[in-house]
Amino acid sequence: MYSQPGNPFSGCIFRYRSVNECNLNALEKNRLYFSTPENFNDPYDNLLYVNLEEICCNIWGNLCIGMDSYIEKISKTHSVEAFITHEFWNGTNQQLIVNEHLNNVCMCVDHIKKSIRHNVKIICFSEVYDSILMWSHYANNHQGYILVYDIDDLKSADRYASESLSINNKTRLEKVSYVTRQIDLTDDVENFVRYNMLETLGDIKPPPFSISQYTLRQAISQKSIEWRYEQEWRLIPRVIDLQNESPLTYISCMPKAVILGAQCNLKDSEQITSIARNIHLPIYRMSLNEYTPTYQLEILALDNI
Image (cartoon, rainbow, N blue to C red; front, side):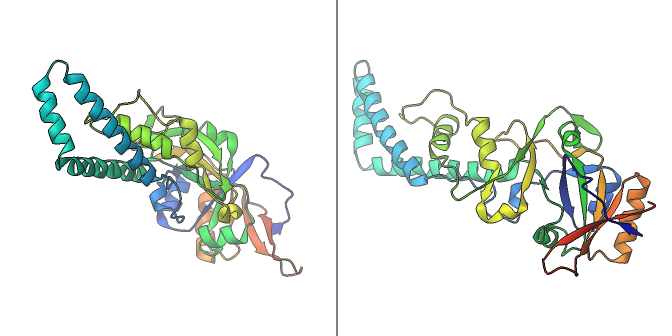
């Protein structure tokens, strides 16, 4: 038996799920597992924009200045070494040296871009529970379910690196912004590569540099405006490490409710309902509204659960 609820989900966000053994097992254990952007359906997700040509030109220029400065400096005390270095640098070997150095630059930049897609851990949510597109894309064509989470509960949830191994790595909940252009991280990545990943080879080495956490959070919490229908929130590591994979595996957090999809079949509905009853969760079901001309989903509360 069903009844029409008011708005029972104030202060909550929603996690769309398909029905499979892994997801149902996570529901039974109150676990939410982190994923990496390399497995997301948006190929631009966490794909840092970097102007590689600009970086190579800048590093090449500084390399030349640095070598000339180095030769001038050692000529005052080591004239023979300075002469040999000058001949070597200004001879036919210069282009080979520069090309090798710039190849290293390209590999370093590529490594950073791949690292952030592999190392960052994210759990995705949505502000909405009645999106036809979201149910279609993330809950197996309305055959899955939604888990409802209180925002404050997510912020204070216990975090784990592996089975029952609790860790102190903090997380933060970020609202995704939808934009028409990516953040330009050319300068940040150039300085990061130059200081952290390259041999000097006469290059003028800058002071210690790290990309700010604010900039990195911006980069991993924005998507193309074409995805704005998702109204997404993300649980991410508080500290983002470009060079090391986050140890976060899952958090433990009890949902506030379960919402069955409008096309969730009887077998799956009974299985989800059984788990929800065991952990004392309210159960709802989405329904197609066939009595109005608008494309709109309704939510119904299951009574006597």
